[in-house]
Image 1: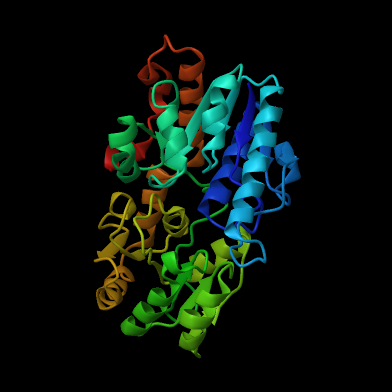
Image 2: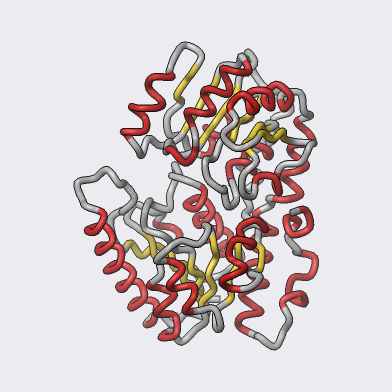
Length: 366
């Protein structure tokens, strides 16, 4: 098929990834190409050129640039207008909308081919405006059961296609290395709760290594810098290879979202490396972690998370890897997206008939 993928424009779709959505978009485009599809990726400048990139604007994601929010909104709107103009002239078989913007949804009826939309976040305005306009004529897929529940009132029950990772990139490590320590990774922003991970690791008596892009200087200055010490090591913004190595060396991993995490792709990466997880019980996290690979604490309960760390560190690493293989194989994810595409292109074929053996395990375990 000739497939257009519309990305969000906040950050480049390239390593080192700014977050899970960038990694997911890159992985999906790469997997579809490997299966013989012709992919065109509409994304911000700096994205990976080999993905059939059409760069449309500089990344718009830093809220700390000189541009005002209104100015950024205007830049994004103009960029999505250009994207939809180009897509309408591109002779595509299908459009996969991975953006978080309402305009592609509003303009979807102008296209000569169908569009599908993946839901990666809870409902928010003005994105909801676009989704509401397409309730009757578009196929939506949510990345977790918990996220599907949040959208159900608006659009009915969407398909659930769990995110996947390249299990080879995050190779299994049968034993940690060095002195016992914890790891945390993600964007260094308030909603990811890095400062709570530092506090929880200290409560558990473990050194912490953490990695991710410093995209919020005020948060770093107010919450991270005052907590740094000899037991806390900032590793920088790492690519996949370095992340996998560091995660595989760790004795336990922390996940500390301060919102209802719609998926938590970092959990898949931890488990693939064999590293057990202590996490806040938020959003999709209880669907992903079971007692074989993780220990949950109540949301924002730092002392409880510290206790979870001391329990999780004793879980078997092989069980963690098995959980990742069962839930997060990118090949299974791609199977399901291809099945969705076929159903949209041939609506007379029920979705179950196209899924066959590729039913995503997350559907059965959530």
